[in-house]
Length: 110
Image 1 (cartoon, rainbow, N blue to C red):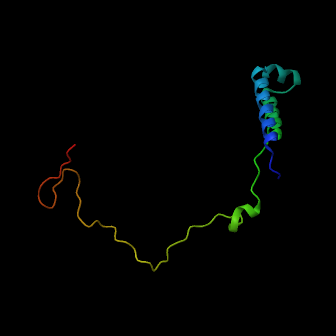
Image 2: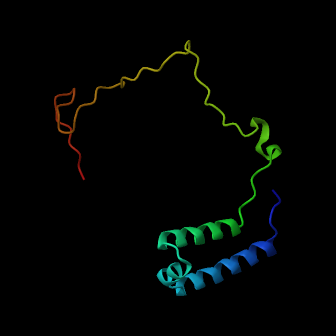
Image 3: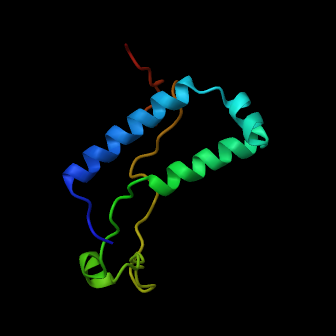
């Protein structure tokens, strides 16, 4: 899909601003009744119309995606033979206020 030019984008923004002002002033119940539609069907038709007129951002070309070709890379796993780290701490730690190895209680001064 071609990339829209700046002037096209500015024109689309101006059109959308006008449409928003018109929607704010509109009496939806009366217009739906005059068209012989339910209110929800009328609103759904308006949404479909605006979605069809919306300028969408360009999608990247296959060449822009790099070597992966649009596929996401999987994280590499560590081999099963690699050594694991020991998770135990080097020094025993107790809870706040519990006796430390030296026999005194650890206190935090603020």
